[in-house]
Image: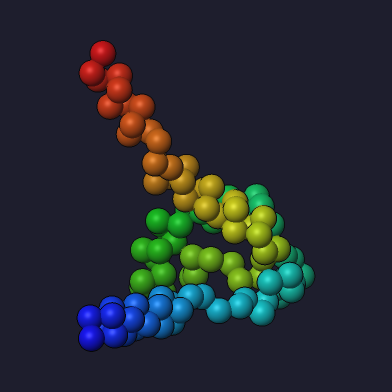
Length: 102
């Protein structure tokens, strides 16, 4: 009986996680209205300005955080790198903590 409960909980958890997975962007690699496809540098810039565009997107239907007409992996990498530059990237706090102890 205990194994059945554990199996049921794991099944529900797996279904919930699969339900959160993003879908395929069918516009990847296709040009926008100006005939452009955003690449790494555009992704980097969009990642850097993402906190500002997020706030603007809450009040405007014409502003999005993420460009769907992108080149795929390189745009995603640039966007993630830009977000890490602005939001700290994770390693900065550890370096500062070590210097304070010395």
